[in-house]
Image 1 (cartoon, rainbow, N blue to C red):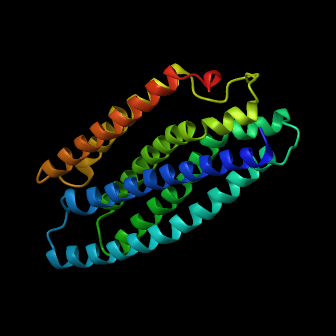
Image 2: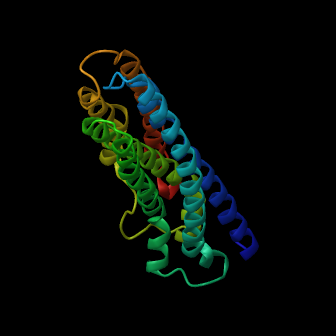
Length: 248
């Protein structure tokens, strides 16, 4: 394949990968915010404090979303270019270079978790500063981390799918010496975690927020989210198993 064609394949795959990663994290962030701020009942009965907290946290959420989104876009773009530029430059496909390309989905997903961890600390601290109970801060931090894990796992599965043409270029028709992708069993476990495991943990932390009163909307919202995410993860896992890498 000519150098220009290789560059075009890499460019298009990068755009698709960036788009699915963006929406995976954006959808996860919006769901976590709506779930935490609107669906879960507050422990305190002070309506004025709840209104002020919601306003401040909403502004903080938008600001953090813009800053973290810009950082992730810049970081991911540079990271992707460093790993794939050699494909269109006619450079030798060494084992290290190929290995770095095949590790892209996992490495990008791991980097995507960083803003979520920062948010878990920042928003829990913000809630405490606004006078929210400590238990609510723990619930907020836990919810954000769980949402980040779901978003990063989905981004991983989607990125693997979007970068298959790039993997094919890097391998040049050959099979890798060792697999750098998830096998059948880990994919099934990941699908279970997204559809059942993590949502069940979310249900387990509900008592940190309220003792059985007003949790109906939160349970319904979490169940619906689990159904959608679990279905998407299962479909992606099934397609990945059904379309092995050596058939690209």
